[in-house]
Length: 223
Image 1: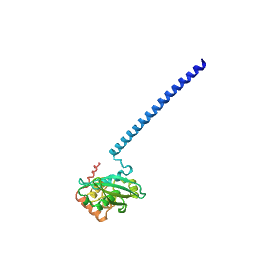
Image 2: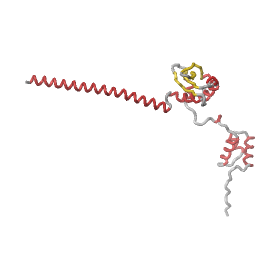
Image 3: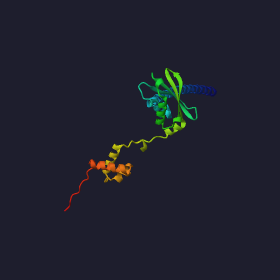
């Protein structure tokens, strides 16, 4: 009796173990299946969000944007189709150009404009026609990694003083701003506006003759 009960218990335990093992295997398979679809769905959402946000080219999204908008025209459509980073010295941007006037595009002007916007030298950019692909003219732009690294360092929010156009209107406006805080003299104009003594005297005479200086409040006489 004791032996029969022990064997029955063993069979029962073995059956329960096999059942739990089968359930465990089924759940693992189900979770792996759902996990694959979940990861696929997540990657799809990331890809869609990246395209919408303009991050499809990762760290080169700024350069891509500059290339695609350098020739702004309704007659010319330029798109960066692929980016190749295999070469250690430069990065290749494969560009598709769709235009009925593609044979009239001034690529020298394009390189000069691109050089100006990237802030690099003329020898940092190379433009080569590859051929025709998918109904578009295909070009390869090679930009040195040095130029790309310098661009990634950032730019100032405002242009340098060297490129600021300081015409007569700007100097006159600045002079009137200075006159609000202190008495205006030719010497102050010379120092603040960084102009010659002759032009400072001439500007001071023009301002005083035109009565453009702010009126200073007069003090009251005290008995």
